[in-house]
Image 1 (tube, rainbow, N blue to C red):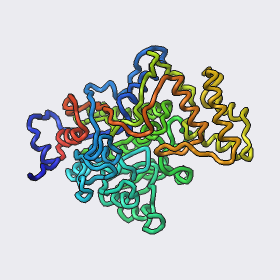
Image 2 (cartoon, rainbow, N blue to C red):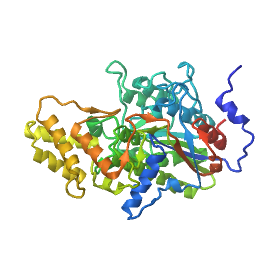
Image 3 (cartoon, rainbow, N blue to C red):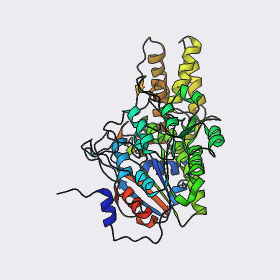
Image 4 (cartoon, rainbow, N blue to C red):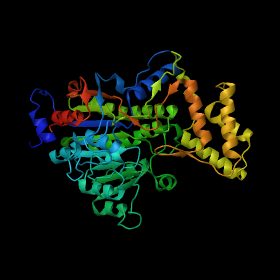
Length: 467
């Protein structure tokens, strides 16, 4: 029996009729953002406000909310490639596959591509590299999410109006190919480095790629900094979202589709770093505010949808004591990865002769231990034992997560502050937990009832008339 295509299926959904067409579509994806990542953030903010209860995020106040399942075509637990492809195309595929059927040969058009075919302006933006799995699923077709150079070339083939992220991961195919930066110019793209550079080039550019500064990429090109680690001048997701809206709004008569990914929620959860993850959710919320400002000016023509590709870490809110102490997380001032850099700097400064007093002071300064947060005798002992094992010997085995290799003392500090906050984690990988779906605007009432991830782009396409 011949398989019914996704977009033919959309045309057959005659049960729904839409009084208004969504001319402007925002699709925000919190990578790794399960329901507990969202509610944990709100409970954390509530405790900071001095109460037991929720301080709502803007997007959780949307009038329509439900949950979605996320399994892939081949696995009960999806990866970001298959999860992103499902959200981009409405088709489940094999883990590791970008924008292709399960056979890893047949390309699938995304809703972004359908929007472009309709004549809309299109933008794809993320807080990680622009060739990472989730953003790539909207413009690329590749059997392997790690083929970064080929995925980067697909960006130009898709020809969308605006792209943004930290950088390209492999801009010259390991020195064997033509530079993607050169290709950008050949395909008519203006390259902007940082928000100020964007503002200087925005008006004259026909198509634009916004990346962080070359100085920032020389330090770390894989992603922009975590919100918890951000310094003045760093490119942030709110800047990226603001730039995307400004650029796509240069011709509002065409309408637009914009996907924005909060990519580092996932990264923090892979490291089981609750304080960093909650701040990333807050940071995504700040970006969504940019879309809400646009919505307030175009309420009858704008649709905003928020969801996630999967949950990461199996986050648990409560570890058995029928209580939470999430406010403790406010005293964590850097991510686990940034604290690793602090420890590495101490190693360099001392010729790798860091004393326990120096390490203890760094822990106090960056986690509030012994000062704002009192440690049990056992917790203090654990920290000192990890110090003795890793700072007094010759070899250190770093603790590895999906996107980081961190000092064992940094990882132990995060585990202890999680304990104090009464937050638990099942693993350092993904889970099959439900993810949230929130919607506001034209056609938002059709994001109700239990959903599967492939239904989200199908409903967006129907509401926006992308057939």
